[in-house]
Image (cartoon, rainbow, N blue to C red):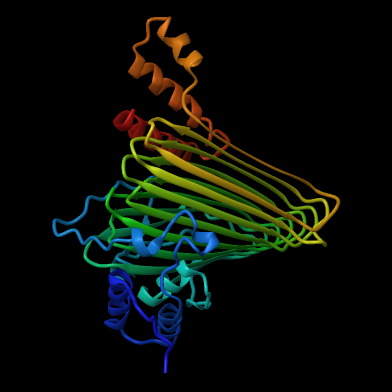
Length: 399
């Protein structure tokens, strides 16, 4: 017999019922059993201190349908609608990229459990060793608002290969739980770009799990536009020597929105360099949190790890919490973190106002200047322009 939740709340009961209506597979049954044991975490769980799922997660179905954002980059898109791959619309993949059987991997992480118990068939892609995907691979998660769903993605980038993968979430999601596993083999180079663009009433749980090989290079770019609930987790296992990780992200949080960005980089090999920079803008009564952890094992000498989180609060009701963590067991390392939370400096605003610029326009210029250089290092011009266009659109509407 399963050890069931003693008193499941309405959301937990609804998720269990939704999973129960799906065909029972061994993987889904294991995930459902895990969820029935542990339920949704509360703030008493340290990793979820800033996001109480039991009280915040509301499964709001949209009877009027959903508005989809346009694709951020040109080219064929792999469409995953309400967690199910649109097989009939599967586009030709770039040379060197192929679809492979989905392997699956059990996890006790809350987001992974929910994704597995609500997901249909998983999607798995592989880039051949030494290959180079000539165009970005766009995985587009479209939520119609019909019901909660899960999705599972696996991407393996072979040794010495190069690829850019663009992940987009759009539409209205009563709950979208997406778990992605990315393996970057020795000497490979990859860019993973995230565009989270679900509407203001959506609930999104997303977890990206990464395995990094020796001499590999990975750049993660994230744009999160706040919905009612966004929890994005990025967990990196840097097990290959002399690899390089770069993370850059912007979180834009409007009234009643909530974004929780949680990163965890585990260094278990020597010579790994990691750099994280996130910029956040919060307006109205929006809420946000950044939890960043860097773990350096005793054998991970010569680690160079940096982490920064900078936030602008544009109203008295806005809130943002930053919790950077370092766990270091090696002695020959360079590690550091920093976090700032502030409003626009009055002297900066005065400088622009004194030159005849109206206050609203001056504030918008300062906010734009705060976030606009986040993606300056992006080599792909079309990708860089896509991020900046979305930032400017949000600032125009919330400035």
